[in-house]
Image (cartoon, rainbow, N blue to C red; front, side, top):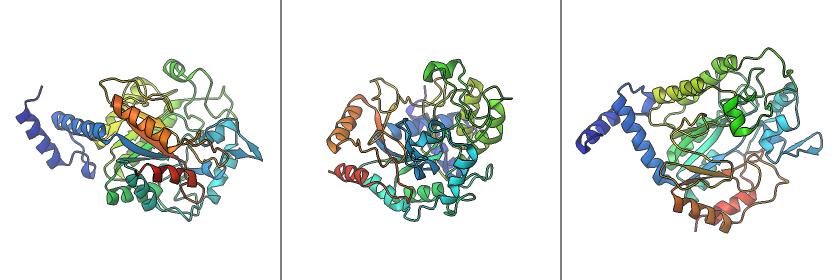
Length: 355
């Protein structure tokens, strides 16, 4: 146990080193511990944040070939409609959200009382919403928009005084033959035994090695998002299915090395993480540990214009109050449209949260 004097001294040393600033690698274990403790205290006090799901799936709005998909999550459409990889990738040529205004997104979040903003750097479809040197399958190199969305949102957060975090799908990647989804024991325990890999482009009995994807794409892209966009308050992993405990620990080590003050959510896998995250739209149980409730405004995380089942402002305020009462953060999602606009019902909710 550190004395108060030692703690303050260690904190000062860590602050001098930058902790997470300028992507300094902190080798001193005590300084790393202080950075993490500082981040945990901030997270506990933040209470309210915004998440945004936005990607190629937004263009489809939950419909493919004139049919609405049965899966309520529009961002899963590549899998739920079994869209061939080549046809899905062709959507990139049409992604040109000319009305995207990152400052407006972040100002609306801040005005609604949110303290941090988390964006989908790469979802399960494998498409990067930033400029990746690892894969040209990204928003800068593959679309006419030709802008680094993650960079612009990071800048907007810094100007507005919000903390910035990134979502990264470390396991599922339907653009990769070795992408995850073949459930190991841990994955089956959490998500069921159904094979969630891309089996419509590649047969289920193919030559398959998750470690090839993990080494060639996952780890290099995680390094990119940790080193290219300044300080991250957190990295939000999701759906551990095939990933091993050893691989989860490798990702944890990368986060600690590149940004020692960056928190890791509980969906990295195997109970590894700095705070717990229950199921979607499930309020966390009361406990002494850090936790975060994540929820949608309607039913889908990604844009789906036919999904009009929006919660009322009063319902969202009640969820927020319940989360605060049990010590859980509440992160509320928006699903911007193909032009980059926050849908009108979502704006109405955010406006209502101001009061």
